[in-house]
Image (tube, rainbow, N blue to C red; front, side, top):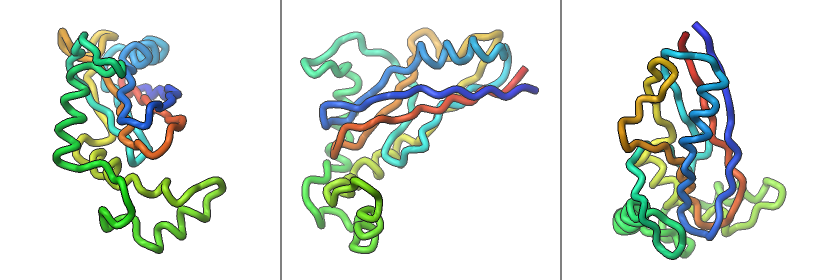
Length: 166
């Protein structure tokens, strides 16, 4: 059995939840691996991000979001409203803010992303996709999205891809 690891560097933007279509990059990593049959895990170690497989909507709003993404954002806004002020959620508490501020360059508002943490819990931080004869089993309309739910600041993210098989 072989194991192969690749990464995809991403940049969030617009201070809105951002959906990165990473399908082509994941397919490239699968091809580089030489593994034909097994599983491909697409993962985020960021606790405010998710990975999901979903249909591409092909229609976009003025912000460049696919309609399916807009629908998901609107549903999540109803379930887990965007954190707009301190005290809106229990987290972060004073000890967490003190800890966060011990990191170089961190600002107090950077901890006001509880909504992103909660949304990540709903969608999960990884997808496992079957790899058969060198092809990802995504179905006819499946795409892989890395979602950055954190609206507090724009920043670099890393999508990890691990392929296991033969």
